[in-house]
Length: 479
Image 1 (cartoon, one colour):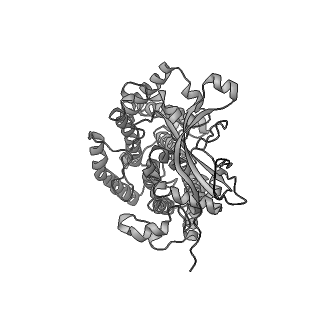
Image 2 (cartoon, rainbow, N blue to C red; image 1 turned 90 degrees about the vertical axis):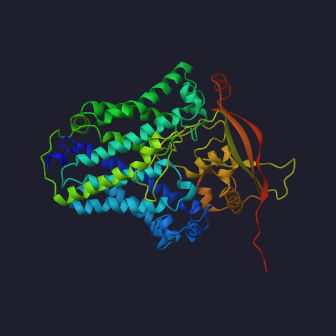
Image 3 (cartoon, helix red, strand yellow; image 1 turned 60 degrees about the vertical axis):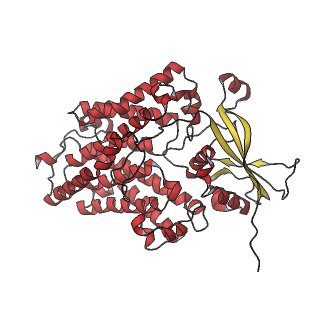
């Protein structure tokens, strides 16, 4: 079955699978660490309440069979353990059906989490991880030769990620067409990183060059993925370089890292061997007929399901980050079709006063990733994802994003909820809950070079309004 085998992709398969498993580890750790505060029975948007109104056919998940906080955490930690076992190579030491079964279990576990995750999991990188994880099932392990068909399915996924992002930009905000979007984006992106201040202050001609290179990488270079080697590998390396540029300029969860992992699957062993101290040549171990049949069936399913994302790519009303089925397979991707020009941030404050007045002293809550104290430098978190911090950015864009959870967040702060407190960098009322909490709206901008030299501040902020007035804790009703 020479047509089925990719002879020079043993190292590429290994690198892809173990890197993907590492991202699975991160995703399951995020779920385990943040579940109780966000989705637990006493969380901001409880899973139990969601399951009561959405049937299995609307959102397939193991939690329809049984749900409790303990069950959810068990699923998250089981996923983390299985992923870690794959990172260290244990799935290469077991029979092929067992290895495939491990990848199936990882996909089912994470699908179960995403499908009950509600607004906290409504991001394109969740679907991207699930689609890549599904395809990993059909890559095999050391017991079989690397399947060329599956590797091309990974290229097709990478193509849709890049081209989808490129087209949504050209069809979206005019600043992508006049090359000016990065005048604003480094400053207004959801969660800036430690180098974002420096990126923002690059000369404007370089910002325009960044956008132009982005267009070329996302709209022209992906065509090379389907050309013979070394053209395909060159295209993949260009994508890796641009994704690393994005990694250093901000925090976008595992979106950029997973795109890099997909691109690594295109790089031939001859290029990876010097870096990994591996062998360019690997003896064939054969391929079972059953594995070929299963892989061909999966490929046929991907081809059929590709109708919807292809139609979306060709549509003038292109949608970004859309799943066309409940299993998150063969999705549409894209990001930042529009760019915000001004950054607003919601700043939460508390006080021990039950009836605040002009003399009340308000103390600010600090988040790990979202901007707060102007003197605090943005930090690097990606590929780890701070879900509450991201949703706070969306809430500042429009109150409708905050409707399902914001008032509950304030109530949990008033109750001194330890789960919510653990999501924060600094809870000034961790020892004694506040009497009142309020939310103010601020305009944030990066400090200029002279302002930074004078004050040491990374941000300059100005209060522009009130998002939520002083709110007291709801006392439990008594009969």
